[in-house]
Length: 485
View: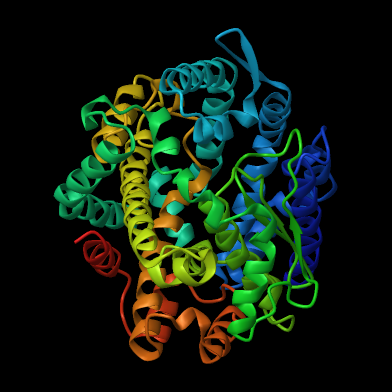
């Protein structure tokens, strides 16, 4: 297969898959057709396509062709999961709650007994209906990746991604050790204030409520979210919609996934941002995160080749998303855009910093768990999921989530590297443009230039080019130590 053919057909399939993902994920379509799409592009999973990608010298293209191979193998299972999630209900205390609405209920219910019962029912229902599907899905992926003869699954995925997963796991473990005492102290303080219980009594269902910060909801009304985002971007000299290329979908809708997402259907011409509102500051932070993704893809130079525009190291787009969402944690941002008094802003900023530390520690533990998971037969490992996630976060996790709480292809590594890149970028921007750089038009110029490069360069190279620093958790930990001092 000629490289030109691979690129043209690849971009066409990528567009169809993206549009299908948007429609089904947004609850606009009940019956996904991923298998049919893969069937129309069968030549992209051929040995000739793989050889063309390998010979192209583009690691991103080679990794993507393998992702296509895996995607075609697991599409029937992915479709079954999507259909079940859209139709399923969870029974709790005599009430039937749509499965996809459970996370919203957990975040908004002050009744701890109800939250615990609902989350337990969710975990049980998910494990019973999806556990086997998820195991088979990962087994199919493993088999496809191992066929490359690039070592075991962990080594092969790392080589395809250009990431030493074991080395990143070592850094994650060191981060957990460095921040353990700080997390224990700050979490205990917040739990006393918010819930009046001991840290040892926390369960997974408590996390969404603990970090919900609902008493500040009035400062972050849903009907002001879009205007606030557009206004802040305008202060940086940026158009949040990128001349209409970014389309917002923020309506409540049955069947809509609870997890917000961004879909670059055509880069840079057509990008969707999807949010299912829960209320309060969390919606603002989530929207800003997805806005970072959306504006990134909508800013990419149309002159770049398909693999540079649409593929590559997703740590980069995750870092841009985090750069935007992290400004909503800043006390100065909370005062200006949330109209909070300085004392209230400082109190909220503390809660948000604890939540941030919880998230990074959770993902660090997820990486350590997934390194073990993918070097096992996926059976009899539920206890390690509970041990590692509970030890890192102090919230008791459910064994039934040990396969549901895993994203394919070690995407957890992309998030962790994104935290490293984002913290380095934010540190550099603060050095050169002060702490309120998110209002500075000169930063908008810098950001637009970086975003225009797409993901042609991986996160480590972008960090060196933009900040002169390597990827490390030092800036992540240092910022949190300052916020929680």
